[in-house]
Length: 111
Image 1 (tube, one colour):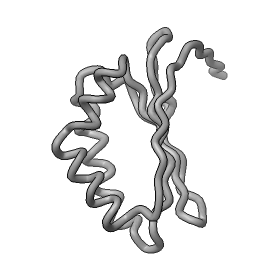
Image 2 (tube, helix red, strand yellow):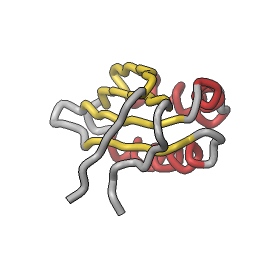
Image 3 (cartoon, one colour):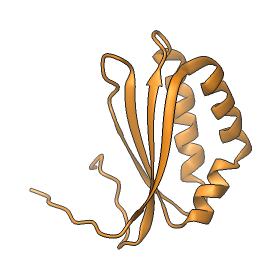
Image 4 (tube, one colour):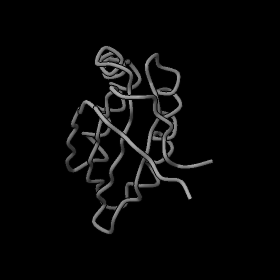
């Protein structure tokens, strides 16, 4: 199975989460990140997710894809997600940035 998320024909939305993990926190953070992915998958409007490995400074990039802005807002307001956000700010991340983008076009190549 490809690690590239299968997405529908545009338009749809991408949430881009860029974060700096504090040193030594990956082992603590990884189990919750996996739990949050399962929770997001159960949310109405979730289309898929892609991630990149963290670099040596702790920067990671995660992208999630959503059907519409209402689905993104519902995910943002999920009680478990909100608790994880608070814990992330207090314990795991030195900084992060969230960007929401409308995907208007996509195309692919598969060998």
